[in-house]
Length: 218
Image 1 (spheres, rainbow, N blue to C red):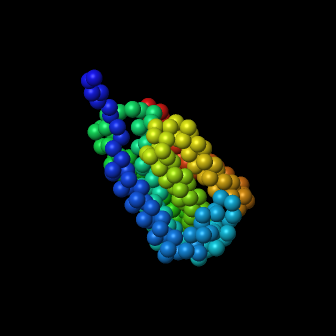
Image 2: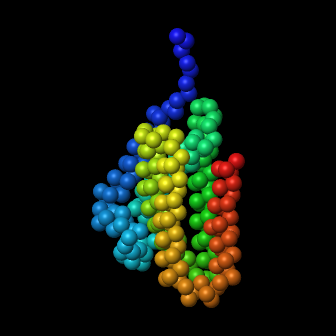
């Protein structure tokens, strides 16, 4: 019987990233315990938004921990997505991850800078900061879905397209809930600046998703 060479996904470095992201979650939980409890029920209860939207803004340790948690798991989820739908050899696939995480960090910082910059230009910094805080909160929360999906795709249902589809559906659902909350709270202001809102929506929200979707599809 001749041996058959099989390419298997090396999970050592993925395990390291999963543990590292878990450390950031534990830090957020232990250092900000009451805030963490309010945060984990965010899609079902707006208490977190009401309590912390006015007290603290975007730059704080809690958001930093969750931001790092999100970046690691978002990048890993994109990597596993590519591995599921675009099978490549192990070496080139592994080398793609640093590019994914660098691209994601650049995208998030550029987008955040443009959002805050628009608020400064139009003299509505306070409102824009509040909106960004709310969006960021829901986006950070969706990082938990990515974390669970990464675990399933790496250790349990390896290469499962169903897990990918369910994860994407839940991520979209969470962020849609966030957008609905924002639209309800600022509907009068959005009506007054409807043209600028549509411009912002197309340039900073829809266009990047189309570009990312086109890249993943190819």
